[in-house]
Length: 356
Ligand code: COI
Image 1 (cartoon, rainbow, N blue to C red):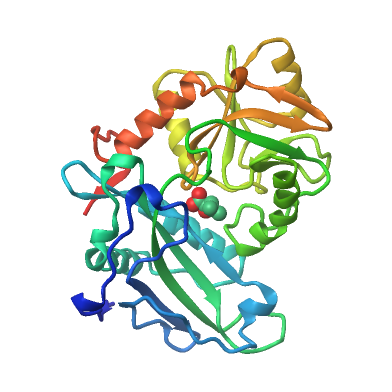
Image 2 (tube, rainbow, N blue to C red):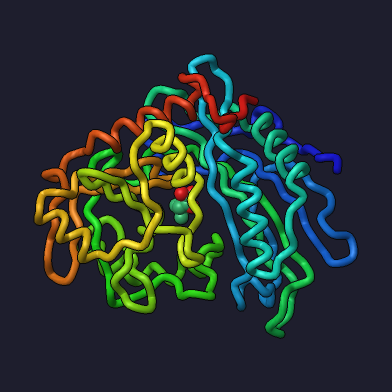
């Protein structure tokens, strides 16, 4: 499919704000990629056009029954001034798995990738400089636009991609975050939509996140819905525990998000010959190991969060301080390695990076 491009005249384009003042997801670039779907024509007329509000029927099914999926990936500015994408096809493939789970149409990956490249060509100047750990966050999104109140798969959808220059996701930056373990709420149930990147999973997480923030914590760590004992994931990232003799991360059991950063970290750890187990791990095991002095580090992984060291966990009135609240050695090594590959500073032996 040919990608049409309609761009703003230079006089109407905005300049990117200071790379050190970006925050996360508050500023959007001048253009977006848009592609509609209907049952007759399928996906059609992909277009790069100026960023602007959509007009949506009040009965649009996404507004009522929540057929909405999204992705998150990043473009990085290399020191050679090139733009680097990290595993973009893995994101599009995951989006298609989310689409299948939510009874939404799958995307033509080649067209979407060509559209993304066309969008980045137009808004390439918005990719922040390599200096302050900033990047351009890419948010592909698909929503059901058909007007109707019957509960069934919609026949019309809109796919779009917006871009946002971002700094660190957490206000702490790379400093360790404080995490609240909840056994009051659950994020996902077996057989549910936990592994799909669908809006409802995030909506369901907000109350617990607000309560955690009110208590002074940055994020929530979710436990499994059945026993409320086994660790699942943190609100915006997967989680890893570093014990004296092994590293453990919960398995992809269907209730957690199959993180692309998680997968990349597993690959790096395997290449460094570190013993890693993808297995169920109870929160009590984590606290007990910490008491015995066997828990060395905890860190999260995610596109937005990158590698995020965890300084403490709070569970049932007890606080467990990890690594004296300091950044762990392994988290730092992973952060340095991963970002060196992402920003094109280091050769990429994995074929993860695409230079535009
Ligand atoms: C990402 O890491 O890209 C995410 O999608 C998390 C997000 C909800 C901020």
